[in-house]
Image (tube, rainbow, N blue to C red; front, side, top):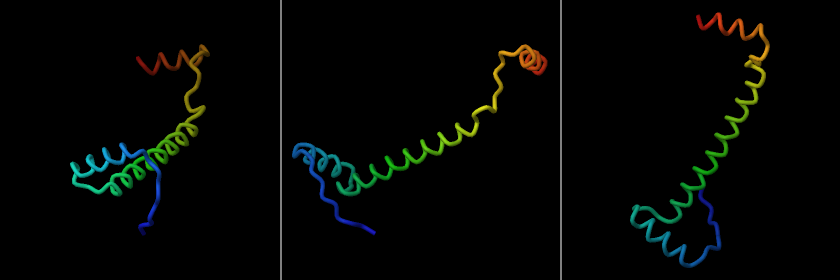
Length: 77
């Protein structure tokens, strides 16, 4: 569903953006929509990555203990 949105932007930016959109063969509305979709998708992706990283917390033991170091050395041989 499309909804009208009113935004306030500097005149020169609007003019440059319209020229850019025309060169791309797109409307200014579609360019703004694509930007917003990409921006919100990236934010969602970052949130997913962060949750996955949090779940990994503690999965890797600190190799500072001599026992862990010994096990790591054996596994490399």
